[in-house]
Amino acid sequence: MPPRTLLLAVDGLDEAEHRALVTGLHPALRATLGSLPATLRILPGGPSEPAPSLTGLVTGTTVAHTGVPTQLPFRPREQDGPAAWDATALRVPTLFEAAEAAGLPVAALQWPATAGSALSWNLPLVEDLRRYGTRWAMAEATSSPRMMREHLAPRRQAGVQLSRIAPDDLVAEIAAALLTGPEPPALTAVHLTGLGRARREAPAGSTAVRRAREDLAGALERILAALDPGPQDRLLLVPGRPLVPTTLLAHPNALLAARSLIRTDGPRLADYRAVVWPDGPHGALHVRRGEGEAVRRLAVDALRPLTERREITLRPVEDGAGATAGTDVIAVLDGAPGTRFDLPVAHRPLVEGDDPYSAGPLAVADPQATTLVRALGAGLPDGAEGSWADLGVSLAAAMGLRLPGACAAGMRQAAARAG
Image (cartoon, rainbow, N blue to C red; front, side):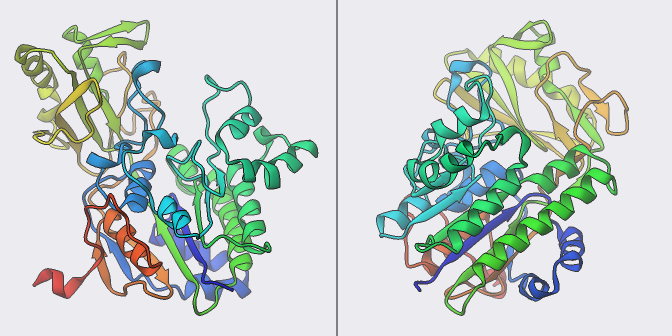
């Protein structure tokens, strides 16, 4: 059998969660996951949310070039651009396309920026009921024909309701079927989101988090048992940035609305001259292209009160990373660990994390933390470090592929890098 690569991204899986997960696994699989060495380090900096991080990984480039700079796509209005899960958002080729061009079939399951792509097996499992009336309509419109024919159509005919099955359960079920099928993919990229979602929405130690951990263990057991890795196979377990409790929730657009730079429709944003687009602990200040210098200065001045809190800084941006076809990014708000920026325009500008009326997430990614990736297999580096994009370049090289749009050099040995 040709070598297989399993790229397994798990939101919310920090080191403590990994230890708890391994303890609860079936003994036959505990050795597989427990013995995976934490050989690769994703250094602080760059994106902290899943969609931009994982897109950087499979393109080998930074968020300034991928087309998916934030978790929530920049769409203050419906016509402002594609969703982050849509493949048309991408500006550079991906590892998936490079593999298929080399004759290596790919399965991408719940992976960002894949909806509508021509991969062999593609299951985005997007959520946009404003655009599609039902989840089955979304699945049919965004999944690949082969995925629909071989895996989704039989389930629909059997009466499966996508609204009643956890996305990670469906993903694990299909991943296991693919890995044990007569033509297993050369590259299987699986994104599991349930644990991260529960840890952001529910208190630590709650029943919801415990159940999400148990569900994740079941999904991983199913996938790893199907892979049953041999000496030529590759397995990468990629967690997101560690999550920390939310201590401060910031609503910068409330300040822009107070300066008439945003027009509201009730509690919602209706139009804007300047707007902060959030991405967890960061927020990019967009100004409509064509607006004069006075508007740009006014927008920056409007946000300065946020920086009176030591948790928040405002830095000018020279390269415009994250700009769109109709906007320029002129500054970025950065929060200390525990800070989260949000989009609403009708909230108080700052809300303490323990405020029961904050209605914000209970946990947020820590952009200053190191992420430990567990990896094993032919051609993968050991004891190396770098960015999400560097990891993608190294994975491509291990598979004998090249990422044509990459700007990263690949993971580097820590000692050599320090020198």
